[in-house]
Length: 165
Ligand code: ROI
Image 1 (cartoon, helix red, strand yellow):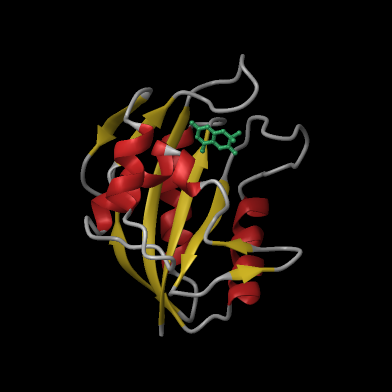
Image 2 (cartoon, rainbow, N blue to C red; image 1 turned 90 degrees about the vertical axis):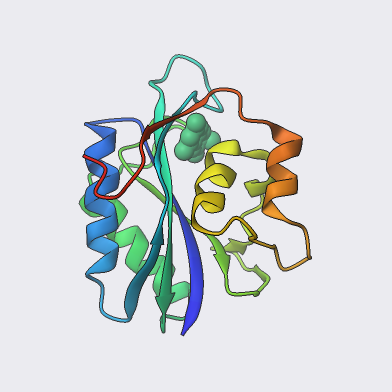
């Protein structure tokens, strides 16, 4: 079993419900056990302006999936939620990103882990720290230190305990 952190985001079609259903979908995958769930956040969009605010959260799972089969399973869930890949950094019904896969460093065409922008995004770092306040990256950096550097502007707690809605 490997501990994996997944970030969730949505800003279309009832985003809170999209995230809650996504957690249920991931939890019901064979080879996956949910071992932690963050608060639910609302955050200002990073990227193109004029899109709705995002709902963001994170989960930790214990899994026997290898990284790419896990990515396949998560992309199937995104597609089931009506995800259509159009504008780069544009609005989306569901985004599921593998942020950390154990202590592995992965740099392939389809997958970069740790997520290449996790250290810049408070909407990723805040939920990760809900699950593990001592979370450390494979290179030894502390998630709490990274969050102190980026700050918590533009992000608010919507609900504390899963199920959020
Ligand atoms: N902005 C916020 N606040 N939350 C997200 O989940 C998010 N996801 C993205 C981009 C478009 C970069 N901006 C985001 O993919």
